[in-house]
Image (tube, rainbow, N blue to C red; front, side, top):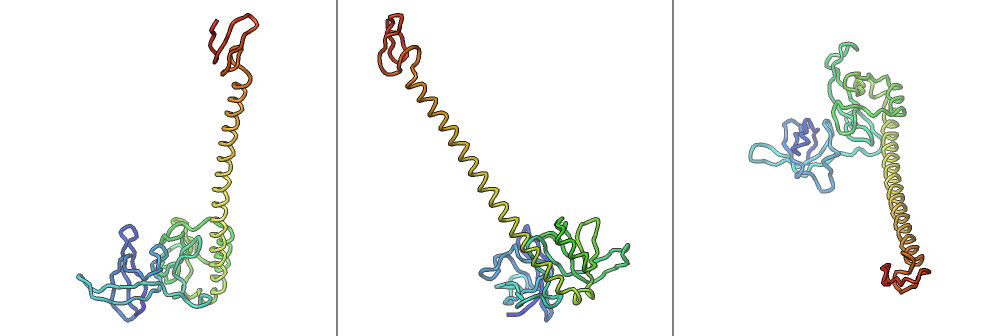
Length: 232
């Protein structure tokens, strides 16, 4: 197994490319992932390990899987990945208004979208502001210079933990709403059925056209009714 970083992902077609830490670029398809690895969890800049092999058109990566750092995030190379509501990418950023031209660093984006809209979550945004991250007003993501990362590793760890917790709470809330909706639907259905049964019982035992539906009855006028039909 050797290590590298994902440099390109074509999500709709299910393939990407990995640049090896020792040099060279490797093609991989989502079918080449290691058992237990999830295609949706991979991100550009993500550190991975794989088995190199020779394919028909060039070098390929087999048994691709994420390199999971042990314990808290320790360096900028540990950061790329998906964390609850957000994704972190490694790359360069240009914002002339902020005097940044090809600046190396990390981008905090919406889940699984490079440069995508960051969640409008006050708890996450307040932590990014504490780091003095730059907000891109056009694409709605945050960027932190590489030289700022070491001093903010504890804050980034906290940001990741909050993002995961908020994501779990959203899942729980959606599940609870789904259960409540099902209960309401079942209750409403039961009410309708009960109403229909009561109406049927009232019709059965309360009489119809002066008589019971299933036995003959002589009305006050002397007419005989059976099953709601006048016989005489």
